[in-house]
Image (cartoon, rainbow, N blue to C red; front, top):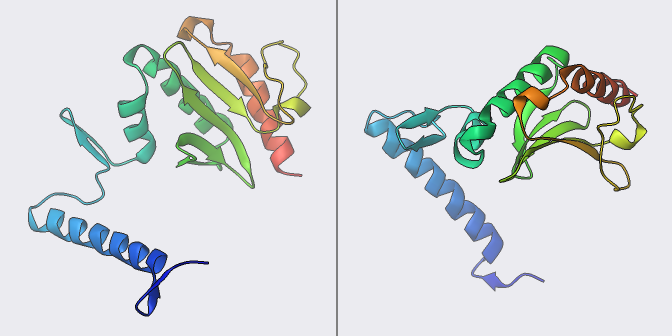
Length: 161
């Protein structure tokens, strides 16, 4: 049971306050001639795409070429999928979540929601979860793009069922 404060619950009040704060900040940005659509404006970088902002802020420079390659391959193989930040990670969404990128200090993890169902003729898929499987990539030269395309095609087939 939520605590009441006046006629609204505390949650209702905090949601309204957050919405007002967002509106005020966008209005203030416009008044100062800045674009409220810019997501990141740090270290001299401006990004209008949340995924670009994620890459700038959370992916180590030595892994950004891997992330760029993964994004290009996803655009090529799954142009109808929506790329967005979900659960704090870049994800590609069709009817359900197709794939995601998770950066770490050692590598980039490219995961597939229903990877357990995939035919893994390349032997790259790892993981022990109920459904998901992933590929870890440490160097761009080590990335098997043919295998990644195969996994993406299988994710799209699974998503269309």
